[in-house]
Image 1 (cartoon, rainbow, N blue to C red):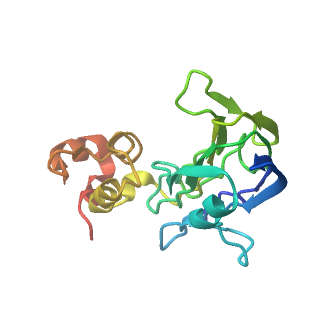
Image 2 (cartoon, rainbow, N blue to C red; image 1 turned 180 degrees about the vertical axis):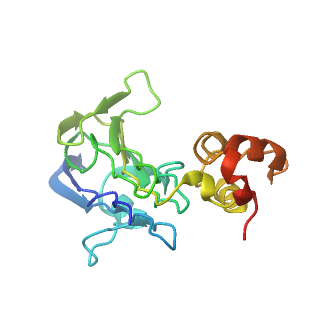
Length: 224
């Protein structure tokens, strides 16, 4: 099977708050999942803890109740799973807005070297961590390190995807179309990685263009 996205690593956030004259020190600790690799008979699994099966992601409601933060986004990352006849699992992103100064300690896997695919499958997407995403102060930082953020700052944690299995051009076009409809794969990646041309207006496969893109494996245009 394709390699998993790794352990996902951990993140500790040290808080110091002062509400109504009461000083409090808090420690937020999270362990992240990633994704499972594809194998010869099925796609990989999205957004799971690949190695530590007794661990689960902390629910948003608990985080926002216990700490002065807002979780802006919690979603699967399109195109993070390696392309293949069977697609690697997708990982997820979490984006936090902090309402008090914090010290962030992050330890993560696969920020430099991706999960590999097998039998012609492609590697998964690298993980990354971004401070203040979408602003002039946006900065991509290493997956291992300590970072300070002021009140009002933000950070985005993106896990690495898992490797694919088999030649992506052999994935049935209808399966690729289904992935695009679900938001797992972008229309651009469907064309570039899988050789499947999709009209996103009608959400249909352009079979003539797909046969041209796929060449000798054009028999995989339709689902079996």
